Amino acid sequence: MPCIFINTNRSVGTINPNIYGQFSEHLGRCIYQGLYVGEDSDIPNVNGMRVDVVNALKKIHIPVLRWPGGCFADTYHWRDGIGPQSQRKTIVNTNWGGVSEDNSFGTHEFMELARQLGCEAYFSGNVGSGTVQEFSDWVEYCNMGGVSPMASLRRENGREEPYNVKYWGIGNEAWGCGGNMRAEYYADLCRQYSTYLRNYSPEHKIFKIASGANVDDYHWTRTVLERAGHVIDAVSLHYYTLPHQDWQHKGSATDFTGEEYYTTLHKTLRMEELVENHSRIIKQFAGGRSIGLAVDEWGTWYDVEPGTNPGFLYQQNTMRDALVAAINLNIFNNHCDTVCMANIAQMVNVLQAMILTEGSRMVLTPTYHVFALYAAHQGAQQLESYAETSILNHDEQAVPTLHVSASCAADGKILVTVANLDSARAAEAKVMLGGVKASGVTGTVLTGPAAAHNTFAAPDTVTPQPLQATLTADGFTATLPACSVAAFTVTPQ
Ligand code: AHR
Image (cartoon, rainbow, N blue to C red):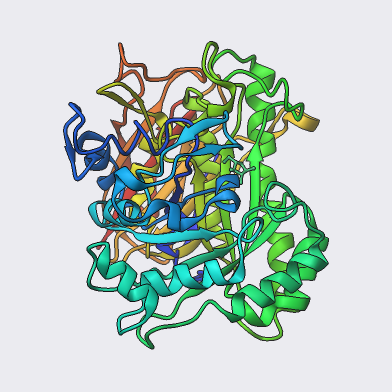
């Protein structure tokens, strides 16, 4: 019987709620149709936001939402998206399918979405094709409470109070779609832009996130930290899981072999090495300042669903994705001493989405359910945990059977989240709680064949179910089904 040890006496810190952040880009049907349908739509909406989607997202307690991109951010000119909608400019979304973008969803609409979701806004500013003045003006427009040209413009557009947007990204993927820059050049630009992103109130200091590395580009992180570390609060990291590294043939979201299932999980596990290595560099070159790692794009990236626009990145979502989410979130929880934020890509209808929509219909994905199972980790104290398990397979398919993280909330309840990566065999697990005596335990599990997924015709194929857990003298035992993600809540005596 594999053992899981939870040491309630040791912790690396508090799990920043922002680790459960999301990302929404002007890409495919994420913003338009997925989140925003406009006030005149037949689809029930409040101020243009879909009621069904917003209500579902509220249940997973989204702490922070990144917008407007992604690659789109470095082509976005925020003034195009303010003022009367009928007078806004229509532009071409050159990154994603060359479709028309009418800018009907802009700063005020995004802040209305954030208000309805009850989350913080994280704006990704345009460094690649914008100007320092333009970016500086956006911060002033959003955050200036007194009298100034940008505050007056905001008021003319109907918003009296400042929005106090806290999180600002200084460009996106500056090494790629955000300008194809060298790390050295970007670091200098980052210093320059950061200088003019002002605080307009001592109670609402902004948090600046530098555009970070692609995967294992450690030179990038080191250069940005060495040259611009003194002007930022965090640096980002982007790492996507692709079953095959060939961008023309990444693999199907639903039609995959057993080998591809394990390769996908093996590649996901690499996140731990990346987080540890980038974090080490950050600590080494931060000069004593506390600088976080923001994994502001992560998730699976497959071939698009057959027959859909290749530029829209629409993909289905299976139990395999649930395991990818569980592994990544366990890793972020266990490294919450440096990971200050993470944003899964993306929230609706794009890549590893929480929700898929088709007209007025909506379906929750297995990934959504993992975020629900893990929600109580937000703001809790991480607890050291260790799974004593065997390794399945070899080389590029090697994975541990079990993957775990644990935390203790302010009310003393302990949440243990465990993924059973074995697609064929259940695991009888003995969970040992060192340092605490339990008076009760409840379990919930998400399970199914690796390719199981929810469709508009069968939306409840993969949904959480109660899972039996039995208290023992030193913890509890439970049977973790093959290919499953389980969450146990322990009440201490
Ligand atoms: O999430 C899709 C795209 O992936 C983003 O726009 C970009 O930042 C990344 O390459």
